[in-house]
Image (cartoon, rainbow, N blue to C red; front, side, top):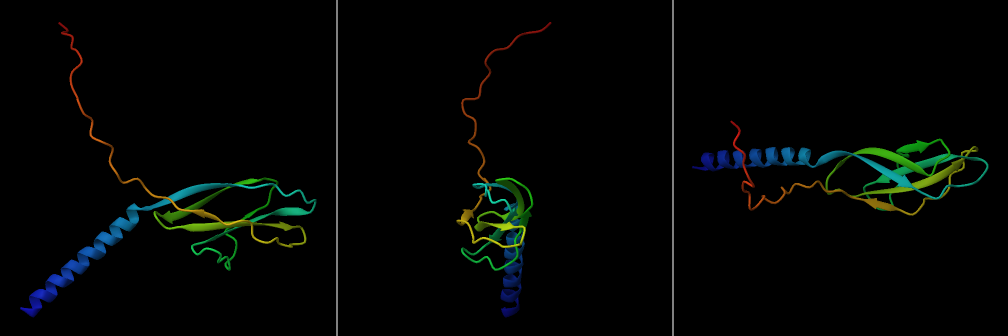
Amino acid sequence: MDNKKELIMKKIISLLIFILVISSTIYAATINITFVWNYNEESDLAGYKLYQSNISGDYTSDAVAIIYRDTNTYTYQIDMEGGIQSYFVLTAFDTSENESGYSNEVPFIFFIDTNAPLTPTIFNIKNYVIIQ
């Protein structure tokens, strides 16, 4: 009797793991996020660094993008899971590699629409033509 219960529990756990793996791949996507900011006008400006974190205020890792051009927009491509929040900040750096402080933090979260549209109603034939 205990072996049957154990076998059933193993099957249930296996099924739950399978469902979790399948559902996590459904809610993942590659996202293009376009950022915009006020352009710095320093004559020795070399570019900007974009930082990303899943924890607000924690930007201890390296920049995820270095932007070496005169611009105030940048499109960043990231693979994300739906419902997971990410945070972004931007810094400026000059030709001597001095780096500014962090910009304001920008949170980002996306959800994949998994709801089907409403079922069409009052579906009918408007007219017909007999072709001979």
